[in-house]
Image (cartoon, rainbow, N blue to C red):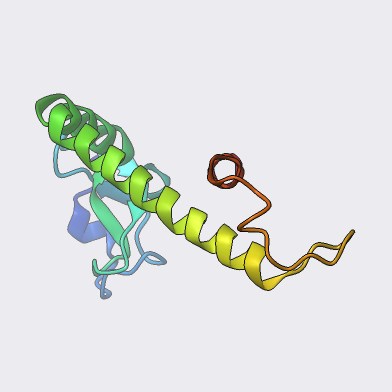
Length: 124
């Protein structure tokens, strides 16, 4: 009997399943016995690993994106817009609270046009 044909219960060695006692694990989707390195981490699981292998998880994620492309694109755009606004506010606060190193000018709001501040925020 080879290592790959051993049933899961024999791989546990009659000990509570942890990542240190397992040698191989069966993927929930493809039902293949694979090494632990083929599974992503998941702290909520008893053995500390996901139930599906990386290959199957990648396929599942791609299929989800294909089925929900419009919603995903809207979420990505919304997250990007929110992140951009947060960065712009941070940059403006920083420029207002830290005077210029060269001239000592503290008020950059009158000196720097809003478009330049937005361009700086986008380049971060």
